[in-house]
Length: 250
Image 1: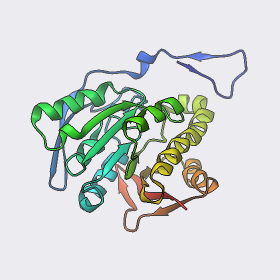
Image 2: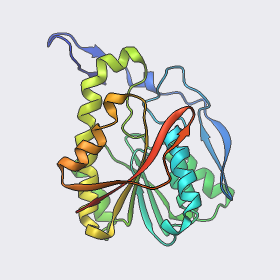
Image 3: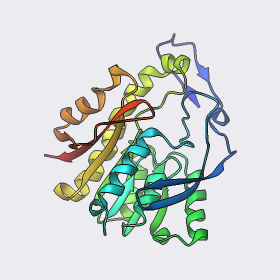
């Protein structure tokens, strides 16, 4: 993995991909409303932020609590989740949706948790699928849509815009963090257009840096999308302010 930031052209910081991997997963139980979920994840990370999505982030807790209170959003729907991490939101959705596709740049732990759901005999586990998807990757998006030509009713995301793992790396990765938002919205826009007005993007946003708070909203507005804060969702999760946004095509 090569990361380049605001440094001299000749200077390159090289970080081996194993730096972001810790396979000491623990079987953990989570409860959202009446739904009890078991899955493998890390309890903590050795760095401030975990790029591989092996933790359950506050945004996922916010989104799952919201979905458990509004099951009608999910009933009988097809869902694709971006940046699924350990898959906790998609696994919850599988209890009510007819089809759930979990995506991430690394599907290892997603597949492990899908296998777990199947072994536990959990309802909806047969409708769970894992796909590799790096935002903005046209070939990967096209392959997913070829396998799902009718598109999806819902696109879900939680904490998917946070990519830094420590303050030091944040300083180095800052340009990369901001530049990751357009590819995210390239992906969202392509998925939205497959279904048109029938599809919506539900995003759980957690505020960690004030200069990030307007980035998501500005990107949606610049693309002519409609972005609305869902009433009653602004709350505090793990001492951080969070809110649910709903994003659609105009």
